Image 1 (spheres, rainbow, N blue to C red):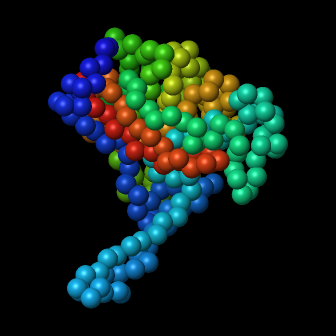
Image 2 (cartoon, rainbow, N blue to C red):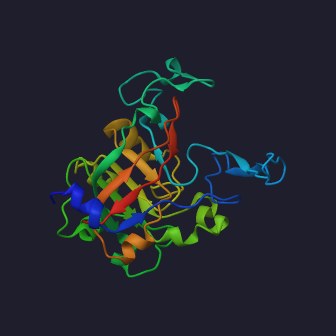
Length: 262
């Protein structure tokens, strides 16, 4: 697919692939929740002309909501993806000195949707469903997955976003296991994403998909996407534009992905 960027931006339909943030929203239990509140209400302070403003404050974990994982998020045998000892480049105050999320360049790439829920003929995949290489290949069909692409997997679980307990489900959920991840990595993708909280099938004691992508293959992971509108439009390939928050030293960050129909 040759991308005519000017034409796409002028005439293409835009799909917001991010989930909203709100108090009580789903979050993985190993990460801090999203907190929000007004710190100044209208009328607390008035100018001589009678105008006022309101402002607010937020706090959240860097892996809460629609977000991207930096390579430094996981290590294997104490080593980061380049063999650096994680203990030598980390601190509570500064985070990780290598491969942190602020080193991820803005994303302007071809995206491919792999709609496994549609393939299985269900609204959402069962909680213990393992996505196999054969399923990924069948979902792709005639749409090639090329080096540098971003592959997004739809399970249908985005529909549970407003029900935090159902979405998190004690950290049980569908996704690919290591063989599925290896099928994706063999395509040379830049990143893989899904509409679930953990991307891979969980529970998983050692998180082998995260290790394979982040440590062994340097493939980013995007989680908690909303792929429902994209799937309803039956759009399998698109221009993906996104950029994570530039958090120095962080292992991940919120991201706002936009898919543009071509």
